[in-house]
Image (cartoon, rainbow over all chains, first blue to last red; front, side):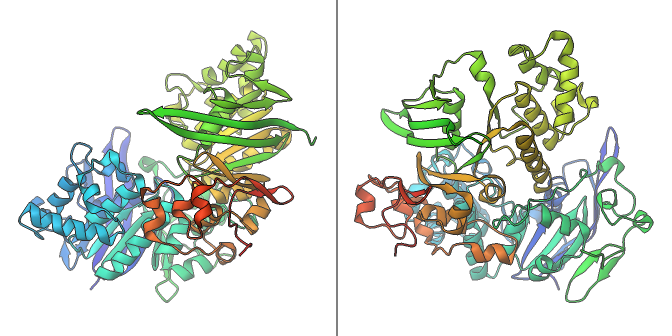
Length: 321
Length: 319
């Protein structure tokens, strides 16, 4: 049984302009201890998927259909009380901008102790402090007490990011959901963040679901990857396969848009824009931008299984590169 | 292309006072930029790259040193004729366009301010400029809120082009954009440069973009240029350890890129420099190769081969 599994997940919002059908049947799986990435452009529904999984759409006007199962139990029907035993305990979260994710009016310690006490790891603040100190040392913070007594604005971006990693992992969750971790930071600090998440995740045996727009991050961090476009998964594969033999035209286009360090080719733009979800294209949502589009693309694309966990939602999975 | 630099920077410095202590945002920068070239200024946040751009634009007053444009020093207060010739495109297209101005009003402003064309030609000229950046005249009466990120950045470019400048300071012009849109804006920049013989000062933290667009690159760290040279040479054989570290931390997508990335031994503790202060090389607290001299003496920017310079006591390749 997969640790996390979403089945035919749909999210719609009722807007003044009409029904905005954003997530259009998302199927994804994360096994225990696995590092999985969801990659796509902004506005393609990556973060919305994460929020749906975390139950953060409950008090919005979102209409959610489908299923999200965590360790066998359905999350979508979970009560707020039930969520409290999962969020921050069995599922940890890391968000994009570390300085915005911390409350500026409390010290780092106060926030971290609360997480530890809520997670049931400690009853007293004194014990929580011991656990926090140990956990911060683990992220190569030499002087944990200085960090614990500091307010978030007194920390550099890199330190704040490590505090957030600590917060996400301190209760030894089974799954960590990381939404663009470190992408608001410098590239050297981002690299450090990814290395740390990887090392700590391995140590705890935690699975990591990382949401990112950066294909380089995917390649360096993840084992398996889902490529998302306009609310649908268009391709899934292990990282090696995806980067060496991408099959979906969108995956290929996305790869060609990345500027290369070797400078061998100018990055190629993808014509057109991500569609408006109140009037999303019928059939394959990528077909209006696809160089290989044909009449059959007006129908929902079949999911073709190419073996070895490589699946692609395209009528032309063999399309010439 | 003439060899005399169109813009030079000599000993340019900017200090700020923070709670009584002096903070050097820029500590004596020397640069030469030739007409028609793209010079990339690369560095992480806090390296002083935006301050450098602001001083060149006259948005801030230098503490010391000079910006020399066509042989004459530029003051912070400069004539409108001079301002016209050096323009800027900034990073965030969501905050650099006035939300209450239509596209037309935004692009018309420099036409009026610099008296580029007669009043009855404004509308036609705005249409031409939109066409140049690949937008249509139908966008003229839109507000920024109705435009995508890529379109906004095109409007910002059209506004910069309206005054027919010679130099454009591009301060992270694509870093708020998706890769698919970034690719289109980069292609447009290359095309415009060819058409109008523009000189670009391209400020960015993204080395992959630099590799694809700039002929020369200067790497900045804590207010100093630590390495400078032709892009190909700096990428193929970085000399300063900071450049190596920066290159090694870029997440890449292909095997070919992986092969050219320098190796770097990561020490998680050293990443922040542990708050240590160096009187010498500013990178010493994070550098695994630092020796005593690195902590005490500021290394000068020296020539290693023609035009490829590094400010390092123990540059890579020297053992």
